[in-house]
Length: 164
Length: 167
Image: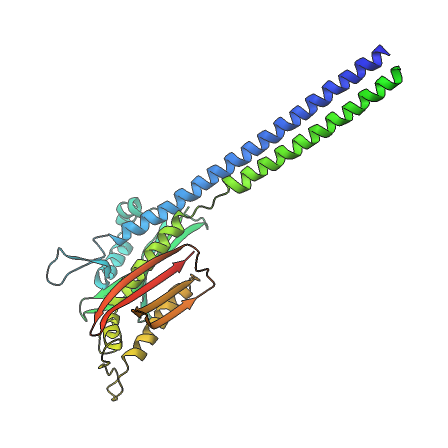
């Protein structure tokens, strides 16, 4: 009878230990999942912030910004000069050293496009350097495209795609 | 006597196991609540920035855009449409600044916010008089929104232009 009592006690201890380990394993799995999600979230947030940073960099790029016809120092808000867009696009296209050096340091792996919405028509790919990965963070910002020769303002959109 | 004691022991053991199961279930429930209720907050820093930039830039850029009505800007057309209506865009004797304005704004909004599937409400008003109202998508009036505002002075008072972009 004493042996049976001891067996029952042993079984009890084993059951308690088993439940304890199951709880610990469950806790560990949960903790690792939460940590993984948190790291992934931080990575995604950084990726999105990079897109925002690139958009702001492009918006205030002196190579693209409009200047007042009367004074070169007055810069129009959210305005790109159409001739500056064409010039910068050509310079970056023709000079791979500039593209892979100076502008790569600024924009990294991204695609920067200015699209004319009204009147419909033109689209300029100013900078395009893909990392080969498909995942990207995109954003669009409306900008004014100023044509100095006709003195007309067109409605445009600045498209930014940042690759991982 | 001994058999009775054993029966009592077994009963208490079963109760302890039941209690343990309840504790495990409550713990699991709590963990799930923490995981999905508290920790699972969406990252919306990008959306907030994009909507805020969109709303303010959209209104600013839209007003400065040159239309095909005698090279006048959208802002000029608004002033005329809300005022004495003196613009004849096609030189056909019809004062059509309002029609031209409507077409231009429709074209721009369709090519941008509608194409990107962003719910919006565009409104032009003077006092309680609503001059123009355009909207797209399903949105709740109480849901989070970013607003772009502009004021245009006209012959008959200030004209308010608002663009609400909803999340």
